[in-house]
Image 1: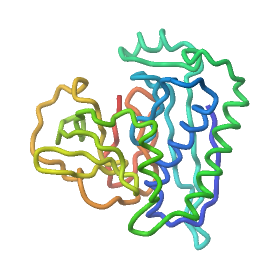
Image 2: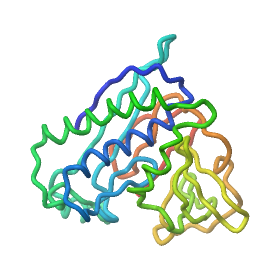
Image 3: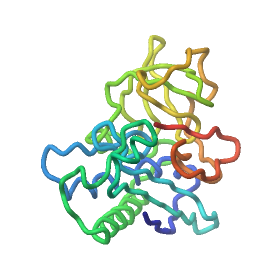
Length: 243
């Protein structure tokens, strides 16, 4: 639908966290224009959903690093109408803004999200802590978390690598999951996460990238949805495939 470019002094290590934070900012901005009890929620890392149906997707890319920081290009695609036809073609639930029952002009939607991104970046610059992330991120994300308390599958190349119960996000934006062995973390850009009824593969051993500290991919956070237009994957990472 539209993209914005921002300069930030934050280091490359902060960019995966920003991907989650900026998805949350867009969700908060749109939710502010809806009625109490709306169904807008956020599927980690930054897909906007109306209930269980995808409403919008976000892609963040770095346009270069320098001594002064990074230049980020952030884009969002919102389904404005035609969800029923698109869902029939894709064979999965798709939502559009018309489903919200709240008429808002396109320019107002765009301005609301762009302003929220700018404010979120300002806040992140003040609150970012190396080795920690954004201390306030888990609580704010929890207000819109579409996966909270749900059993999910962790996939790589379409194969289930591990399963766990979603526990929210860590301050650095990683997804927290728990299985019989305890809690583990999932990195943005490494793998994909789906609620268990949607996956059909047989779980093998633990995924190579389903734990450990967050890292900063070199190009894009997150990787694209398999049903959307392909975009470049980050070198050295596995393309995410979210429903």
